[in-house]
Length: 479
Ligand SMILES: Cc1cc2nc3c(=O)[nH]c(=O)nc-3n(C[C@H](O)[C@H](O)[C@H](O)COP(=O)(O)O)c2cc1C
Image (cartoon, rainbow, N blue to C red):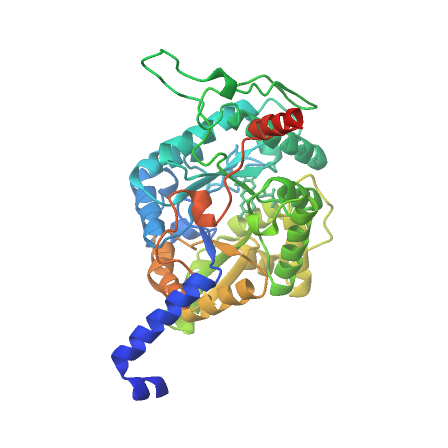
């Protein structure tokens, strides 16, 4: 007000633009993923009157939401995956009311989305336990070529017995072994991506030479879990490597992430927990000789947006009322490692639970939450029905921006994976109301900085590991 009185409204607007421009130039900015399951994240999302109930297998819907995320200048769309029906365990009895059980295979969907989007990154989960490195390397390389350098791979080790049973195994591989296999898996995949140097394909019609054999490197990997000759039957990806994302938060998960990941998805409830995770992972990254700035930590956030706080709370309650107890209980049972909670009284506290071969960090997060807030089983499943242990923020666009800013400026996050409660409305509201607020504060881009996902995330392009060795040998010979 004071400023307006002194210099006039137009001058004030110009000054604010200048201030924002300066902020944008000097200030580090948030990285944002749009985490998009078909009908949204809330366990009862599909029942909401405005939700796209068949979203998981509706391409027009995915085209619309991916284009909305691109309009909002999100760094990437992210699709999670499981190689079994989500929640499959005892059979159909708990699943008849679940809206998230069927969906497109993510790489197929992202390939289609690459044609109807121009700038946004396209990231998906693929399991290192139920894939072979050669398969995966060529699929992500193909997506990177199709999209002009916008692919990202969320490397997970998978969690459920149901997945094992779809891949000729009786039991899911043991947690530590999964992570050992995952590390070797990434090494093989990156070697395959490096099979060809960037300029290996000369395609000289005159001489008839298609590629320069000096620029071909056959990985010939022989290790504990894999034996892969190579080379890959596709050229090096435009980004060198598609962006590698990791989402494990156990000790093994953090160590793998620190060695391999460029973005880390995680679930954190409080700023203190987020800061502890952030510093721990960044220190591990440095310990492995990598630059901590080259790894972006992105906790999940489930935003419920209203024009007033009251309206946001009412929206949240509207969704909560759609939860059938069997769905809530099945979700909670799944998240604590497939332990059947239906035999325990709903209005009593969560019993002591044994450690399972499932995700370790999520079990810890959920038991900590139950103890901290003294929740009964019923209260706990209601509490995690939306965000599954990720951070829930309910409020006005300004309140949501405040909370996103708080973790960002206090070293709890480099950005966020935004998890709309239901789709498409939850994403539309975030793009139309929260993004402009973040931009106004200079916390988020108004234009994409680059053409690849890697450039937009501010990540370096990896050098071909075989060229690095070749150069070192050459220097050795000269000395
Ligand atoms: C944002 C986010 C997305 C995830 N997506 C998947 C997924 O698509 N498929 C999957 O099997 N696990 C997924 N996970 C689970 C992780 O890969 C990992 O198994 C879990 O965080 C626990 O790992 P931990 O055993 O190292 O604690 C995801 C985790 C997060 C935080």
